[in-house]
Length: 365
Image (cartoon, rainbow, N blue to C red):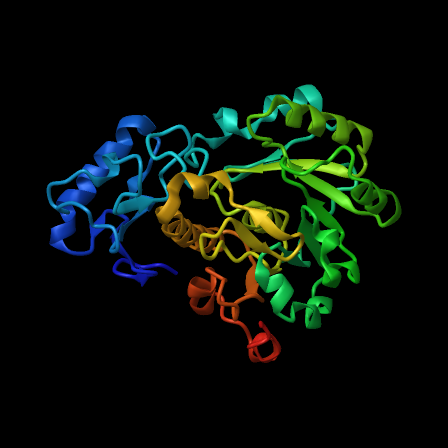
């Protein structure tokens, strides 16, 4: 759990459930709340919200300044209540507030009902799911989610993979030698990859019973929405879609964790969901070797890694909130890797047992 006064990655929780950590933060948190309320139209219940202060970015006087007005970079105060199409730009973590999510355009329910073969929609205040007919109930089951970060390549997660009922992965997972020897039952593919003409994925669907659960969100290119429509209608028994309220810059792996929680998984292992490290022209990737920097990193430049760390903080705060309502455990199998941002949270919130930790420690190169 996260509590008032907690500090993670040089971020201090200064407000929680209506209480302020120290008197010196009282005025600045009131100004922040007022600022956010101006464009949230009263949809936020601040009695259920934490506000964090980034101690590395106090660029103005905490008592009198308005640091969140500087839209070209990060501000010193931030919270989970920073949404899409607000002045916070890419510094958002959810598409909409919990109360307004299902009525918002971000669910894409109209696109689903108008264009996709299955009309059934499973929904709650966190996610919208349009399942394929052979939708699997994961209640009481365990899932290992393998992302493309370097810990997938460097950590020996494959030694404990058989402890999980299912393996999920994403994008070009079939390029990873470890996954070529594993049965991947579920995958998703971002809009930046070729979905329609990908013969490897089509072979996995036809011959290896792979299920594709694609994010209905497909970006700004109309062609990608058309490709999703074509693919889902061509493989209706193997394709479903989902869309989570959580919408940060971390990539699909973190959203797959949320999907697994919503489908009732009791144990969720993760590896390769690490976060970007360094600021070279390309990122290390366990599927295709090198991956071009995403646009948000180019936009935020030197602040991009700080943005990422703050969003991981809000993410794990969110996961802990979900655990109050859903029965699940998290196993961060990439925790020993230097690129793994989540280790700063999972080592305390979801510590690994000795049986797993002894296998996973110091396996990276």
